[in-house]
Length: 114
Length: 337
Image (tube, rainbow over all chains, first blue to last red; front, side, top):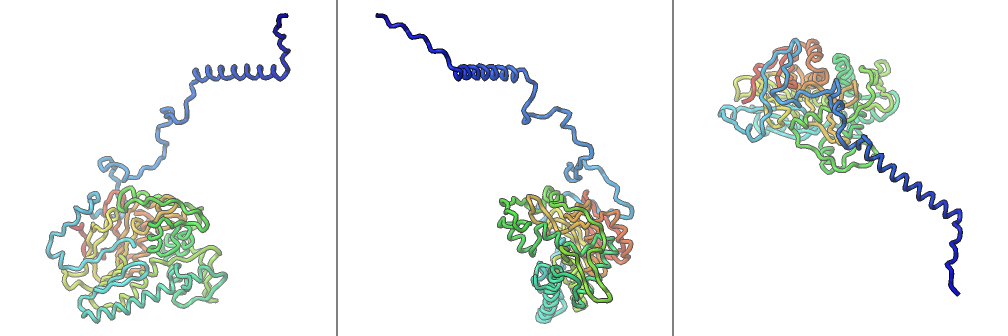
């Protein structure tokens, strides 16, 4: 007597649902893949469009942030006399010189912010 | 020369014509003056009269000394159009300046200073080395902003009839530099003919330096290079005071805050001036004017000077120019070699 393969039992509703979900998921992944390949969106980490790099009007820059050669000369307010225009601050090592003998004898106090 | 510590700074007496014992005795007398003033006017001492007034409630009778100081503070406030404001103690506390500056500096270095009670201590704040341009810029950017309020003396009420003082809840007094200046002025009256008293840069020069050519040589510190002088004045029988944001500053919420609070914003001032030095008849006046001109800027600061014909100001602007205006009190002014 030959054994016949028993016919496959009919698929249950649950199994049909699994196959449907798998088919839909596959279709979704394929569609997303194709969409991403053709999309022009860029991640936020990339540089913005050039027009965004223009400084906002009214942005403040302090004078001291500009290199000395680029600082505009500003007229002092009326009533103020320019005594002197100081050189940029020197490193401490360069300012340690005390050349004149009479300076060493005379007492000097120093006014500063306190 | 005698030196002692008071009001959070070093005070120096130089009276070269006194013998050392006499100078030491005079220094002791002056130190007692400073201690008495600090005991009464310090906002950091909870038992001081000023602190009790700040944290008290309702109209309060005060001593004649405190009354007189508050009256002068109100006058300064009116004459500086509100730029000098003695009621910014709470703002300073909120910014983290809630203890003496020495204690604040130690705490900041230990990474334990933080502004708000109950706030989580932040990680250690990397403080840049002082004196650099970046540092000066950071000091000029306010660390905290509070809603702007009206200028004027509406937060301090002195009832002349009742002899009482009243502050609104939450408002605290801070007379700081004004009291230091007033104390130097009182001490200056006790100085011999040729002497100089220097309280951390606020000083009175009386008579002449016996070793000099007339007057006293006063160096003006470079605000961009503390420890270096950039100007030298010659001053006789006059007071000198300087205001800048470079020294008394501390880390607050990742930025630098400083002690020159702008009453218009209740935040550390942003000024177009790097430093203001005032020469005047008294140290209290010089201190008040230096601070007010720093807050006002050169244009409005000139208006303040015109109301004080016996005062002179030297300011250093953003371009490191030294500008001079007012009475010619300094006998000489030259760039330091």
